[in-house]
Image 1 (tube, rainbow, N blue to C red):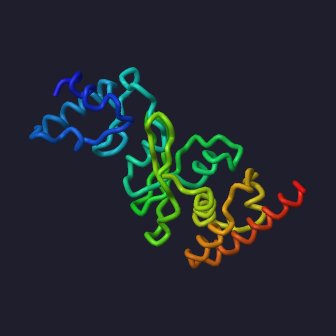
Image 2: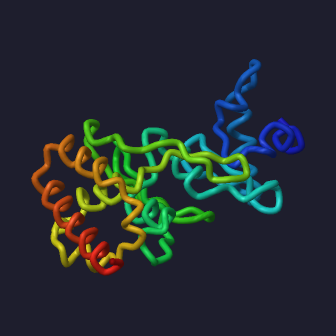
Image 3: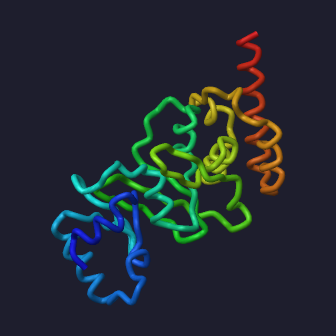
Amino acid sequence: MKWEELLRQVGDEPVFRTGFLAGGGANLSALRSHLSRWVKAGRLIQLAKGVYTLAEPYRKRPPHPFVLANAMKTASYVSLQSALAHFGMIPEHVPTVTSVTTLRPARIQTPVGRFLFRHVKKDWFQGYRQMDLGAGQKAFVATPEKALLDLVYLTPGADRVDFLAELRLQNLENLDRSMLVQLARTSRSAKLRRATLAIEKLLEKKGDAVS
């Protein structure tokens, strides 16, 4: 495969896999050799085994970090502070994209960003949806309610009112309280039920302040 042929095939893709190119009887060994050489030359960025994105200036559009995170581990969705910041629920910029996965946890540094994958059990792998991120890119992202509960679930002591207050949560009126309660019940976790009560207290305080 020549470089120009690769660009014709993946030039519009924010991220691609070796398998995307391996159809039509392609020589897989030769293909991997080409990809490895282009990574070393700085034309491609390898995100994970068999997962690549074009380096600048070859890409036609910048890949969204959430799309890259989804591609690096297929059984994953973006959550915790990354999703909360995306929804405008915390004021801080979050430089590391954090995802939830049923696979092994991992911390990955790449030329296009830092990625953290937190492990959860399969029965807690829920509460996410595919979101349109613009420019034709989509990714699986936790709902605001699930992102908040994922943060509590994976952080020691996060069911305390003072911890939740330190997050400086905003736009709480956009939380679906019934969904929050339902998720906590589904988890069968006393910690998440305590956190839900604490969050409801914050919602009530915010409501009193507005009125």
